[in-house]
Each structure stands twice: as structure tokens, then as C-alpha cells.
Length: 332
Image 1: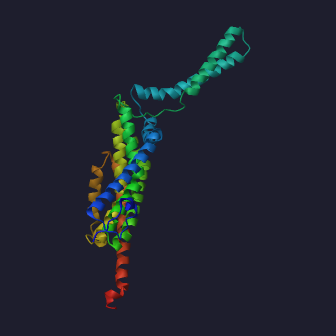
Image 2: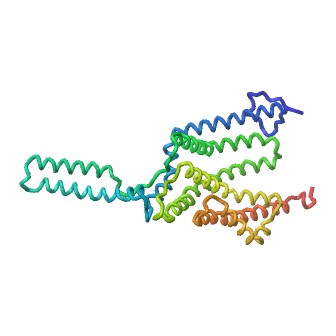
Image 3: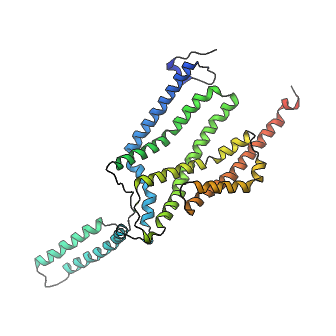
């Protein structure tokens, strides 16, 4: 028997409702519209604050290039000369001021010229950086600044809209789930989202700075490295995405153990093989340098061990529940 639900009541569809094919497609269309609206709002917010978003993504590159130990090339040498020029101008300004104030045979116009020169030096010093400045990604095409801003804003908007998208997905599939599956689905989605955010945060604060710093400082005395915006933002996006996916390891392992495909005993017994597989997987991830690989490998191993502990805890709870269930012991 099908339940004819009015189109206006699509938001109130519950796990007890059964829809016809037409109503089912209508509900899908409306939930996709909600996802699209959430993404559009998030994109508008991200594009409005694109300077903040781009500043966050550019920060690892700025810090890495500002800390270059052996800069080479005209751009790097200019950046390193600016702080020294500031010091020299500041000393010259102090000398001019001291000479203008000291008793001397200078006439009025000469004294005023010294004061004016000191003021000009002071203005330049105020605008000069006190330390080496990092570089920003470079764009090569006339439309690349707009294209990269739009792309980065879209990625950030997708992350902002992800909770709404996952909730709409959950609400759409919940009528097809059993009562037990429904009780497990909501915590699963929440945990997945939480681990994704934690993975992205870990990637931004740990993996990305180490990887960018190593790659920018590697053999820096032989290159004047210019980082193109397209390749840099692709590297950043892929690194953060992979970091977020790596933190889903507990979800995958717990799902495999709960489905009976593997057991915690097998996971512990074959730990050495798992380490080899994880290491091989880390080598295939973004960044072929040892720093990036090591920073991505370490959390994968920790999450693997954590997943085994969580799966073992859940297995004990299932066994205890089965033991305590009177039906399993023949009591009716």
C-alpha cells in the first residue's frame, strides 16, 4: 500500500511513511533543492569572505617562503634585502636627526634639508617590513585570479554545506532502514562528519605546514621557486581532503567488524600486513616527499589501533547483550 503525501508535506516524511514512486521522486527533488540552496548560501558567504579563506590557505606558503634558509633568485634576494634596507634607513634617519639637532655651522636651509631627509627616511622605514616577507601564489592568466577565487570558494562552501547535505541524505534513506539501522545511522553520520572535520583540521595545522615548508626549502639555493595558484590550491585541497578521508579509518574498520567480514582478532594477528598496506597507501597520497608521507602515515597507524580498540569494545557489548538476552537462552 502506498501513501500519497502532499508535496508541501515532504519535510515531514518519517521512517514510518511509505511513498509511491512519484512521491519518492518528488521528495528526492525537494531534498536536492535544499542541498543546492544550502550550497548556494554557503558559496555566497565564502565568496564574500574570499580574502579570509584565501588568507588561511596562503598562510602555510607565506610562512614557508619567509623562513627560507638559503634563498636564491631575484625575488628571494629582494625579500631578504628589505629588512636590511629598513635597518640601514633607520640608522641614516637617526644620523640626520642627530646632525640637525647638534650645534654646527649649518645654515637654516641645510638644517631644514636634513630634517626633511630624516622625515622621508622615517616614512620609508614605517612602510618597510621588519622581517622577510613570505610570498603569495602567482597567477599567470588574466582570468586566473577570478577562477581560483571561485574554485576555492566552491570547495569551502561544500564543506560548510556538508552537514545539511548529509542530513538530507539521512532523511531520504531513513524510510528504507530497519528500526535498528535507524538508531545506528544518525550517530554514524555525526561521527563521520566529526572525523572529517578533525582530519581537515589535522591536515591544515600539521600535514600542510610541514609538507609546504619541506618542499619549499628543499634545494632552495638552486631555485627561485614561483608557486602557481592553480597547482598550490590543488595540492592544498587534495591534502586536506585526504587527511579528512584518513580519519574515516575507524568508521570503515568498525563497519567491517560489525558486518562480520573481519574480527578484531584477525586485525591484531595481521597487524604487520596492515602496516605494510597503510605504508604503501601513504606513498600513493599527495606529496611524494618523506615529510608529507610520514605526517600522513603516523595518524593512519594510530587510527588503525584506535579502530581495533573500538571494534573490540563493540564486540564485547554484542556478546554481553546476546548472553543477557533471555530469548537466546530459551526463556520465553
